[in-house]
Structure formats: structure tokens, C-alpha cells
Amino acid sequence: MSDSLAVNEETQVRVSDIPAVNTVLNAPELAPLLDQYGRTRVTAVLRAHLDALRQQALQGQLTRSSLSVAAMRDELAGLLAADSHSRVRRVFNLTGTVLHTNLGRALLPDEAVQAVMQAMTSPVNLEFNLDTGRRGDRDDLIEDLICELTGAEAATVVNNNAAAVLLMLNALANRREAIVSRGELVEIGGAFRIPDIMKRAGTRLVEVGTTNRTHPHDYEDAIGARTAMLMKVHCSNYEVRGFTRSVDVREVAQIAHRHGVPATVDLGSGTLVDMTQWGLPPEDTVRETIEQGADLVTFSGDKLLGGPQAGLLVGRRDLISKIKRNPLKRALRVGKLTLAALEAVLQLYRAPEFLVERLTTLRLLTRSQAHIRQHTLHALYAVQQALGADYDVQAVPMFSQIGSGAMPVDVLPSFGLRVTYQGGGRSGRHLQALQASFRGLPRPVIGRVADDAFWLDFRCLEPNQLEEFVTQLTAMTR
Ligand SMILES: *Cc1c(COP(=O)(O)O)cnc(C)c1O
Image (cartoon, rainbow, N blue to C red; front, side):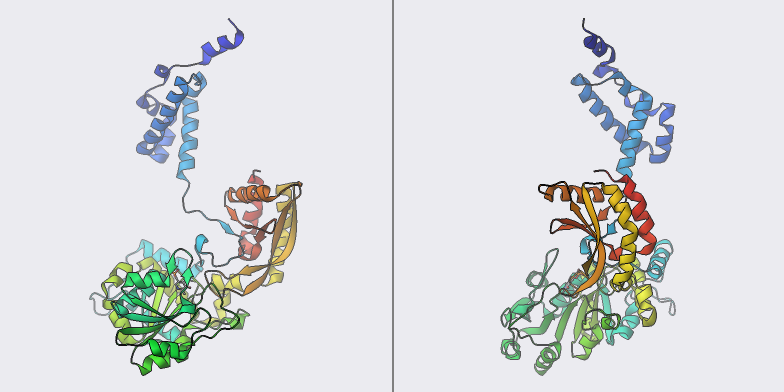
């Protein structure tokens, strides 16, 4: 009998050697796991593990050492821990896109976090009028604040801007027509297309003009008995350049009003303050849009506004009333957490002189290149150390984007790291692997691969996060 066969006979085990579920569960070694995860979870994971052991035994690959209670406990501890990771995880957004839809858009300021915490853990006057003791309307909590900041007569809030547009169309243009320029039939990432939303809202889309040119008479000529509104849509993620003509809000509103129909504007991002005071590109504010004659304006809560996911509708009181009476409003309404966060953010706008420090989105958008450079240099050495000689790491100027369709063409001077592969040959595969390694860190780092390099834009790495970023690099596996 050969040696190896002798070893096999000694260590190989049969299916019948595998202990029963309860035998393992009742072993004292398992008690800490039962305390931490509960009997239900541990039993489920244990059953799956024992099944796997049975398969191994059938293939003659199971060794006796796997059957010790200590081995089982360690295996289960590992499986349970891996399975208990929070699915919603914190990441570092070094993509260079500040309002990154896939990474959750705007980050909430502390004031909003506190407000959400309160609303989560305590009953609140969500729909309860504290003056009268009667039932209230959740919109009442922040309607006056929105009106103060936008100059609108009335306002309401729903789940996001897509919902705001859907609700507006259904409430004001169901089985009637909305006139939109062909240059504004946008698709926003994640399957929001104006023509599709119109269809779902029961609104017939009447396209006017051409992709690059629309004239006032195009709107004028299209107005008929079934016209419910003239609608303008912000070209959030593209720009039409060259031989172009579009009709601005003021003119569209004048045409609409001459014919007794409202002019509505889907502003997309929508800002409440003039961003040029902080060196950001110009963008019409909600207030200006209303002043130009828009009867109703919709915009997002978590784009440039810097708040929670929400859709705001502001404008004429009679139109807002009609919208609030629509049954879809009930289906699309926001919860108390959103309202709490939105109120806190809107309160910040009442003190615009502090906004740039307190509103996280604005703080990130306005960081100076010199400031970002300084922090990039702090991390340069650690990143080079973590990557070894196969990669060259350079601190270089780069451009960030605002993101989420806000100011699509404008870019912000930034700073960060450019990593290139030094191993020769084609670098694409190596850069993809490197990108995956960064994603595999305890707090995943999201960068981007472009132009034969892996790029990490440091704009959204705030100074107080630098240490965590650097420290976890030792966990890098390549
Ligand atoms: C972003 C955007 C939307 C969708 O807003 P969400 O808040 O993401 O639902 C709709 N219209 C325009 C013009 C946009 O820019």
C-alpha cells in the first residue's frame, strides 16, 4: 500500500461522518455566533455549509479536519460576517463628477443629518397642525420656505423631479397636448425621456421646430383647442451649438399667455442662488425663471440644490392646487425623512453668506485647485507605495464635472492622481484590474479609466477623510 493511499484512508471521510445540524448548533463553541446572529441565520448558513461538505465527501475530497467543531465555527463566522456587510456601503467618489447619480448625488450637510435623525427617532408633526390640533398637510411644513426662496406663490414636493414632471403633465395636460421644442426632447440617464413621460402622463406631445432651431412662430402655429401648456425643458446633459435658435422662457411665456395657457419649465437641476458669485457657470435660478413668466417650474432636490432626492414644483397657486388634488400626488409624495432634510437645506439658503461652507455640494464644487492639489500631494506617496513599481503615479491637474446634468459643458479645474502601467505591452487589462482593486478596498475607491490611465480626482475627498483614504491603502490586493 503506497504512502499517499494510507494518508487518504486516514483523512478521507464519508457522508455519514458529517454531523447533524443540531449536533453542531448545540456545541458550546457555537454559542457566541448564536448570540450575535441569532439561531435562524446561523442554522440557515450551517445547513448550506453542511450541504457543501456532503458534496465534497461524495467526491472524496473531504478531510476530517473540516469536521471539527472549531473548523466549522471558524467557517461559519467567516460566512456570516461576509453575509452581514451592509449592502449600502460608503465609497470614496474620486470620479471627478461631484453630483454622481450612481453614487447617490448630493451629500447632505450636518444640519440635514440632524433633522433626519430627529424625524427618524421621534414622532413629528408631519400632517398635524400644532396650532389647531387638526390634521395638516405635509407640504405646509416647507411651502412658505420654498416660496420665500423662489418667489413662487405656491409649492409642493414629490419623490424626484421625474415624478414632478409626470404629476404636472397628468394634472394639467391629461388627454390634452403639451407643446415642446424638438431641441428639448431630452433623455436623462436612467431612462427618463420626455416623450415617454408624456405618454405615461396621458399627454399628447406636440413637437415643434427642429433639433437646432425653434422660432416663436413654431409655438404660435401649434397652439390649438387641445393645447394644455407650452413646456420648456432644460437641456441638462447636452448643448446645441452652432446654427441654433431657441425661444427663451420669457418669449414662450408671452406666447402662452396670449393664448390663455400656462408656460411650464422643467428646469432639471434648478438653483436657488446665483452660482456665479462663487465662480461657477451661470444658470438661471428658479426665481429668475418665475420672473420671466413661467407659471410652473419643476426641479430636483439632490442636484445643485444639494438636498435629498426630491422633486419640487413651484408656481401659480391655482395650478399647484390642482396638482395637489391629483391622486398621483398621494402616490408620489415624500416621506418625513425627505421633508426634514429638505427643510434643513432650505434653511441654509436663508443665510447665503455661509452657504459655501455649510452646503456640502457647494463646498465641493467651489474647492480651489490649489487646495485640492495640496491634499493630492499628501496622498501621492502612499498610493505609489501601495501600487509598487509596476505603476507610475503622478499628481496632475485635471477637470471635474458638476454632474447630474447641471451645467453639462462646464468643467472645474481640479487636481488628482494619474496612474499609468509601467509593465509594457497593453495596459488596458492592468488598468481595469487596478480599478477593481481600488473598488475592493474596505471603503471602495471609485476612479475612472481613460486615455490609458487610471484617474483619481481629489475634489470630493474632503480633508478630514484623507487619513482614512491613505490608511486603508495597506489593504490593497493586486
Ligand atoms: C435630472 C433631470 C430630471 C430628472 O430628475 P430626477 O430628480 O433625477 O428625477 C428631469 N428633467 C431634467 C431636465 C433633468 O435635468
